[in-house]
Image 1 (cartoon, rainbow, N blue to C red):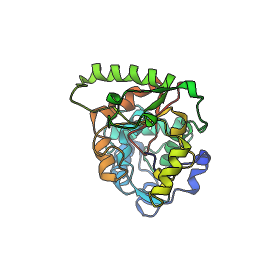
Image 2 (spheres, helix red, strand yellow; image 1 turned 60 degrees about the vertical axis):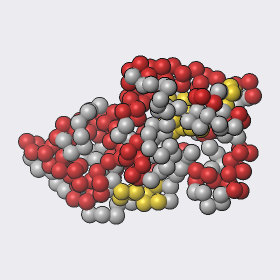
Image 3 (cartoon, helix red, strand yellow; image 1 turned 135 degrees about the vertical axis):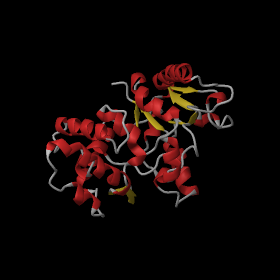
Image 4 (cartoon, rainbow, N blue to C red; image 1 turned 135 degrees about the horizontal axis):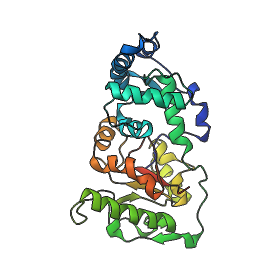
Length: 273
């Protein structure tokens, strides 16, 4: 399920991101001499990863620790967020992105990162023609009993998904018979079905109330990566982003044309270009 979507105007996001704590302002202090620069930055990151306050989807969020796998992949480092090596890699990325190369993941840097992730997604949510949708067997879904009309996937997306599943199974030694990892939770959802959800659950939040969902295209897949399949609770998302399956997706899904929705670890969109 979708929750808390950012709109295509996300490049104007700095207006939506709000610093509520003094932690961010402390990160903007004059940096110490170069010899101690990344030690200082690492100390700031150790605070900001849990305290940076920002607004998203009508809710206040705190910290960026949940998104460390995506952040590390973006800046090209394997280190933890409070390591000096992380700060050094971040400073190089900030320089390339036209930001102050402080090595501190502060509000302007976080805003830029989210804008980049979101800009890679597709905002054409038009319906596919009928012959572009395949009806997939229930065994490939997290809930095998899912109705047939909700087991449709766009053809090219499904082919790419099968290749990605085969690679993940081989590289992670997944047991398809006993594990549900990477099975499809949700794929194509028609506007009619979405309207039905809104009527049934008028207070379901943006997931249930979405009027322009990427699932309309048949190219968006919710995949099981652990925990509660599609719960946006911070604790659940924290669990999901630590699983080996999710971390494998972060590093490898792009090889198969899949782009993440940063806020939902389970949501991946097929964008081969």
